[in-house]
Every structure is written in structure tokens, then in C-alpha cells.
Length: 119
Image (cartoon, rainbow, N blue to C red; front, side, top):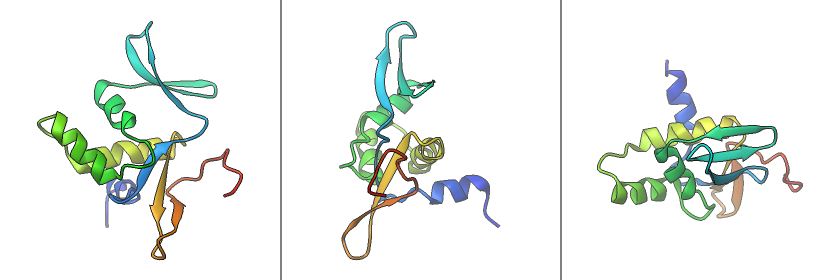
């Protein structure tokens, strides 16, 4: 039987293309001197690593591309850690991951953006 972490991490495909959900904004909070995610009625305070990951979530880069980019900046980057971080934000509906279907068409996977009318 797999662990809950393995199940969550497995939901984030290395070929998925993460982006912030439409109702979420990444910004630097001068009062906290930290990057934060702004959501309706909530603020998520990020550490430097989390901010670096989310700064690369543009809907164009794949998860594996994000890992490779981070490996160019930092000495030790584990793909499973990046996937687990993104999976946690998917569960909180802060990140949406687009996956490509076998027919080549983009499909929304892992999470549905609640403000997206075409879903």
C-alpha cells in the first residue's frame, strides 16, 4: 500500500504545466519581507524555495522543466519535493496543472480552476 504522500505526489505529473489559479497572486509583502500568495480571504506566506518554485509556474514550463531550472540555481533539488509542494497547493486550489492528453490536446488535470467557465 502506498503512503498518502506518494498518492499526492503521484497526482503531479512531471509533464504537467502548473500555473497559479486565476484567483491567486504571487507578490512580495514588504511588511513580512517575504513572498506571499494572495487568495480571497487568505494569505499564504512562502519561504524562498516556495517562492522560487511558484515564480516558475507560468503554465508554459513543465514540472520537470521547473525542477531542472531549480537545479541550475541550487545544489540539491529533489523532484519529489517539488511535486509534493505543488500537490499541496493544488489541494488548496492555489495552483492548477494542465496536462496533455494522448490526442495532444491540453486538459486540466489535478485541479479545476473554480473561476474558469469552460470547465
